[in-house]
Amino acid sequence: CFFISTSSNEFLDCISQTISANSSNVIFTPNNTSYHTILQSTIQNLRFNTTTTPKPLAIITPLSYSHVQSTVICGVKSGLNIRTRSGGHDYEGLSYTSFDHAPFIVLDLTQLRSVTVDSEAKTAWVESGATLGELSYYVSQKSNLLGFPTGECTSVGVGGQLTGGGYGTMARKYGLSADNVIDALVVDVKGRILDRDSMGEDLFWAIRGGGGASFGIVLSWKINLVYVPPVVTVFSLSKTLDADATRLVYKWQHVAYNITEDLFINLLISPINNTMRVTINSLFLGTAEELMKVVSDEFPELGLQEKDCREMSWIESVVYYSVYLRGQSVDALIERRPWPKDYYKFKSDYVKEPIPEQALEEIWKWCLEANLILAIEPHGGKMSEIDETATPYPHREGNLYIIQYVMRWDEEGFNATEKRVAAIRSVYEKMTPYVSKNPREAYVNFRDLDLGTSYNACSTSYKQSLRWGRKYFKDNFKRLAMVKGIFDPTNFFCNEQSIPPLILPR
Ligand code: FDA
Image (cartoon, rainbow, N blue to C red; front, side):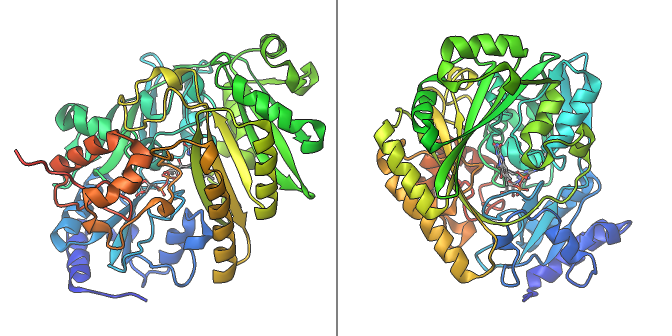
């Protein structure tokens, strides 16, 4: 149901007057035939694509930076909440819905997606509406020796990924995506476009990992490109638990964060036919021969054989790692084909001490019972070398790996959702003894409203938010709130888990 308030009318009048020239391609209200298609185009989580999910009063799809500025100016004038969407992958749907029943609009940046690569300077400007796949593709077109450390799912948007960090297969070598940002263009609450010089180092720090939506709208990012060798090697092995896989996982905990930073080995532990299967996926920045030497010296238990290894270019490895694209050509990275969608709830944890073998056996039983997948990715390498205050992402030295609890299902309805969400929460609860404590840390890009939220998104206090804020950011949360207090003191850019402004008395 659409509730047209005075502020809603005021917003629509303001925005249609400001961008009247081509407004029919930019402003979409529920009266437009393409409203629903545009709204649903990048929604990934079907949990927030139901008839009862609160819908925006309008969707604005800017074609230029001035359209974004106008949206902010009209939003502020009419007091209407803006949800910014780049790739639409937010786990809790915060980029396209709102749970506090106030009217809102969606600012969808899909049309702002250019990637401009300067291969001599080894830098690029990438707009927030580009996908990670498009970014990697256009970088690789300029040079096969340049790449960028992004997450593994190529349909994720640059805007959401870089504002929250961005962890992927090259993080052990080069850090997060956000660690490699050197400039950005942001529309602030006054509608101004700021670059690194004009925004200053505090805001520039906050937008590189402080989570999307809190500080303004990031239009574009200048990134440092990184060296990738002409040949990389991937492998994928699967073992069921009866084949000594628990011992292998136990060993992996000691090896994966400590091994050469050219090697990334992650684990996917999933229920299958009444047992758990461990799938080991890997990217090595070098040849198969070099990889075999590293593995036979440091992780012989893997049982890796030369026939398991596949050499390819770095961009081919991006396709290989992108689950739904494996086996396709690199052109698939820019085709924006719709991906299979389902209902899901994810949670995350960091592990600092290896979990004992016996406890792992217990954990497999819980996962089997709950039908839950564990996606486990190593830290260490460059991730440990970066100081935990360098960017808002604080989970650095001392973290062996991150666990992502993955609950997916395909039945519609309240009961199915309740059952699955209760099951993932129960496993998360039981994991308490084995994961980080005080705070129990979580990754902001794996957004989880269970950690804490406010009913009325825009009136959260700093004190109330500490509960979840410290889990995502540890002591960096206070600095984030202070930056927010300077750049958006009235908390215009807000959602259910945005950073609240902290204004200290002078
Ligand atoms: P979306 O558009 O939903 O935005 C996410 C948040 O950022 C929202 O709060 C939004 O308002 C805000 N935002 C978006 N654009 C903004 C902008 N330009 N300026 C300011 N705020 C903005 N992560 C990871 O690190 N490594 C990985 O490998 C993966 N893999 C992965 C796979 C799949 C299938 C999913 C669904 C998600 C991941 N993620 C991930 C998590 C992903 O990084 C996270 O959900 C990002 O926030 C998604 O960015 P989008 O732009 O797609 O989301």
